[in-house]
Length: 367
Image (cartoon, rainbow, N blue to C red; front, side):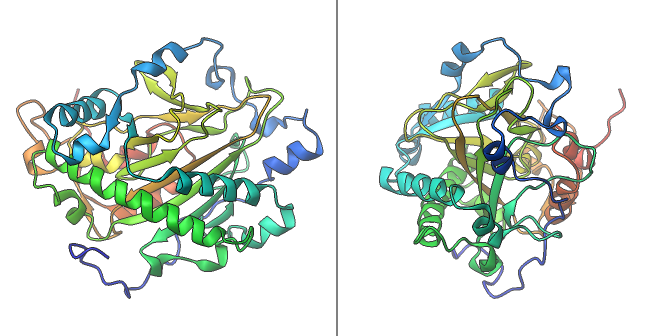
């Protein structure tokens, strides 16, 4: 734990985060019949991926050089400020995470998902929490389901871990997740320093506001789908985190972000990390920086795996706009004060639906 984190390593970990209704394993559905797409996965017409190709816009998604940020490069800090205001997403290069660490994580995860279902189910999520192998955010028997399976683990602080849900197979995967998560955590802390600077604070300020920088790991498996135009791998949503950091496959695109009311693909840059602003930064910045809706689409040729890391505050931290972010440009507070743990669990008890979960934190203004 960093010296600026104020909750003890031995404090009691949260018991649970949120329940989720058990649903079928998508990978197994496809294995048994590659052509079937059950009705529970079929989206309404207006929510289906459109044929319109927006890939030409992918090159406009900002690319940030972390090595320049760490040197305090003014131009790169301005690029970060622009990215957070106008896109809410950016790709990071020269981040210092070794290619070998990224590749080891990809290889281990691919092997895990190829294990027989009964082996993976040894780590199945319990009915009252989201750590383990399965599906989160399923809150009713009626909701349309995502075309994906996931492994979700809380990795930091270490006393929050529920090791019974950490896979033991393939051999060494626990150490690989640990090594990967530590490397991503270092990047996250360095990015938070730059976020602090563009928000007009000392560089360690945001890290300190977390009291405890909690870190969760989610690896998503999106099987190939015979009708990719009718399903979504992950429903549109913004992240409840402070920031999220994603590793993509180099050769399969699936992530799309909402920009100017269009869905823009984030084409992978080999070995780059994709970073997005979470709801916490939006609230702390009083809406200056936006947590943007994003989703995952599928394809009919190849399964895809993505690796997401979420960084967020301790449950007891009160989240509200920072006083100095309430300015002449944004003279009223847009968000009320709310305990992070309450905000997080409330959002997890609803299905992923754009930014609907942020309404509980918004101050209703008279039109």
